Length: 364
Image 1 (cartoon, helix red, strand yellow):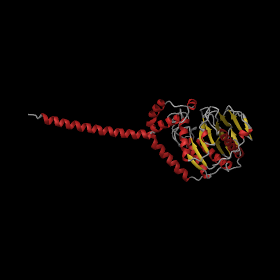
Image 2: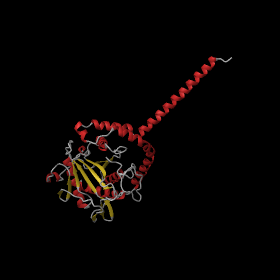
Image 3: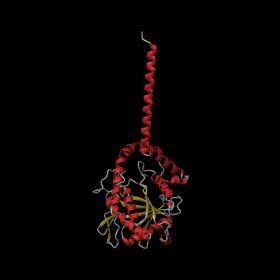
Image 4: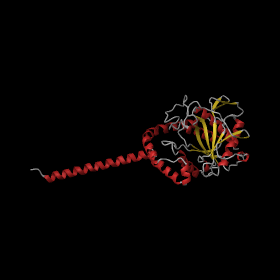
């Protein structure tokens, strides 16, 4: 006769064992996906967005480019697979590039070279004001005076520089040796081929002149483009907290006019082709507090003035606009647009050699 108590006991033991295995499996899955979420920085993205929103007044928030939280979350989750898979590959390439750069002999830009603008577009570089050869296109609400343009700015700290990128994924026309996998129209998440690579070149050049440079390569426009300036403000404030005496802050961009390879503002310096550079200076014309905007403008005029002396045509007219562009954070904070969609990476890297020489000469 079958003992029912024994059968029931065995069944109970098997049930407990199965439940135990299920619990262990669930714990492992939770730990695994917790690590994956941390890798794609979903939490930090949410925190930065909330901090940024809390840090602005209601008036400020209404005029700024605000994130749609639900859109950011869905976009980040959608792209997380690519980030996790591509993270190692990009990191290896970046490390390989860094090792190569350390071994490279840094060549400084020569002076006294013949320069000429290569005009291969129909875009007219109009301007409204001029100071000692420096041209300014004023799109702000302010009427500029000679005093506002006189570059009589005396920075307390001329050697520390912060470089960051509000639009980190901006890229250029592909060329031999600079082919990449696009993640959008003239955009790539590969930091070796985006505007971040140009920032690395500028850091390398400036460091060789004795500058102390912090280069922040944080993604601010990926996976969500909307709200880039809110996120980059969080980053640059953190950078300034770590380097509190820094006056020179550069938000390095690529000009997006035309969004095609037909617009490539270029200057020939000696035997090299270099992408032209344009300062974009913000004001408080849009309603946001910005007590530093006139200092920022004077600083830009100072750099372009020296640039026109050494390499005429390297700089395009300065753009002055009502938007603030996070430039309230320092007394020499600017946007610098290096080339446009039609320029190639090698042309932009060449520009950094000449820009660094200009900055060194102007700030001596």
